[in-house]
Length: 199
Image 1 (cartoon, one colour):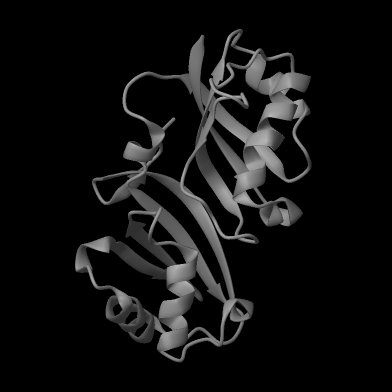
Image 2 (tube, helix red, strand yellow; image 1 turned 90 degrees about the vertical axis):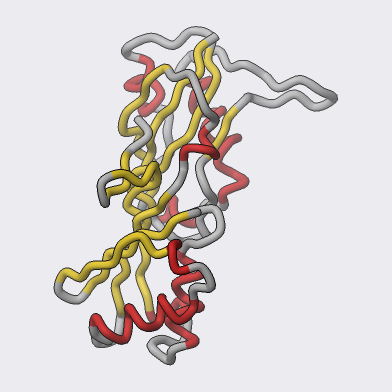
């Protein structure tokens, strides 16, 4: 039995699939590809799949980590699996892994934030995030590119898109979600001022 860690993207309408629906979706597509999945023990066994930190419904993701336990993983398995995935989902890469669990490795999340109204500026954005943080070390990085911001936050299971929306709303920069487009570009370890991919 192999523990396979993989990265996937979900874009377009697939971003509206709730986090809790992803394991059955991944399991069904893996079975269609002929993969033999390890089942959990207990009264109601289900395929053993571990996901990275949850995202709110509607937030696209470009490189989300997940793990699945497979009995017959081969080199071409990812390609076969991709053919069974629904539109909007892409399986990017995979490798057999050992060691710490996925939840221990997801130290930081990187987000790209676009404003539907005029860009509020670097100073107000930085002030909004820093004012909302009770723990200053959570903000790992913030830089700007034209009318968007790249924001890296530690502890992506606690601090994510919802936190950013609340911070911007509290500072009067937006009314709510409708004024923003937020996507998570990657989740992983924090090393040398970059978010390190887990695959």
